[in-house]
Image (cartoon, rainbow, N blue to C red):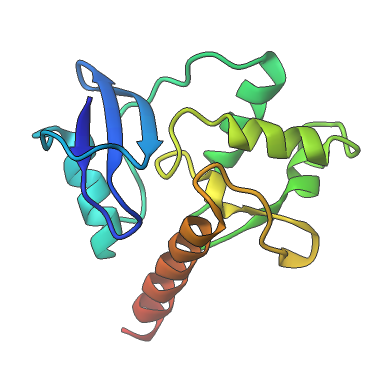
Amino acid sequence: MFVVESPIGPLGVAVEGETVVGVRFGARPGAAGAHPAAEQLTAYFAGTLTEFTVPVEMRGGSEFERAVWREIAQIPYGEMLTYGAIATALGDPGAARAVGTACNHNPVPVIVPCHRVVGAGGKMVGFGGGLDRKRRLLELEARVTLTRAWS
């Protein structure tokens, strides 16, 4: 595991070869990584990267959780979906809370953007990294999207 310093605190990044298998919030300071994931995360936080291309392997989770992770991986940069919308897209409109639990278990946050999932009416609820980190990630993406629209 290596550490990427970011505006939301140090991120521990676990890789196997070129594939990212985990991202953890609040990692202890450690060796920086010379890896495409480190480069892409740094570019993301600088506002110059809006789509991760590093290979990711989502390990663990139930079949439902893996389906949620695939769905949230498709949310475009700067956009948000509600837990209910994802539940509906997966064919179970009553499963919004289960979607929230799956987001909390996302093994590769930021790269697989569970921060883009919000409560009904856009309410800021739930995030494994804490609501302050979620808010800061969404603000970063909104700022970059707006800047690009006006450039």
